[in-house]
Amino acid sequence: MSFKTFSLAIITATTLALPARADPVISVSDAYARVSSPVAKSGAAFLVIENTGDEADQLLGATSDIAKRVELHTHLSDADGNMQMRHVKEGFSIPAGGSHALERGGDHVMFMGLTNGLEHGDVVTVTLTFEKVGELTIEVPVDLERKAQHGGHKHGE
Image (cartoon, rainbow, N blue to C red; front, side, top):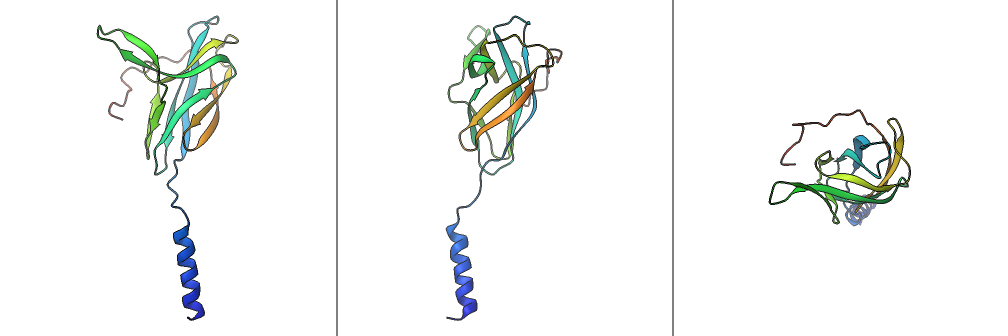
């Protein structure tokens, strides 16, 4: 076997032995947190999670030192049309090449048992835990002036 053929065989074998990289690549945008009043015992964070990778990922949970408990929640309508907030234990899927919005009236990060009041302009540290990419720590500004985005939902995503 010639040196050229041998080298080509080694390069080919090495390339085929390496795993294909189709990992999710996660980023967060438009994050903000809010509370209903300065003395509220609960609050929420809203954000858009984007996955520019070739493989879906799952947001499994969140933590923050501002609350005794942090959970992923959603709003569901009961048989009478009343909205109820529910803990989503399995988390939220972030599709490959797509995004998932955590927004008011829908999916969100819920802070329960706030350890201190939150004021407009404060910054909250939140660690998001994903199934594949692991932990991602973000800084979330408290915005008590932002109005709800009516009609801004992207249905079907």
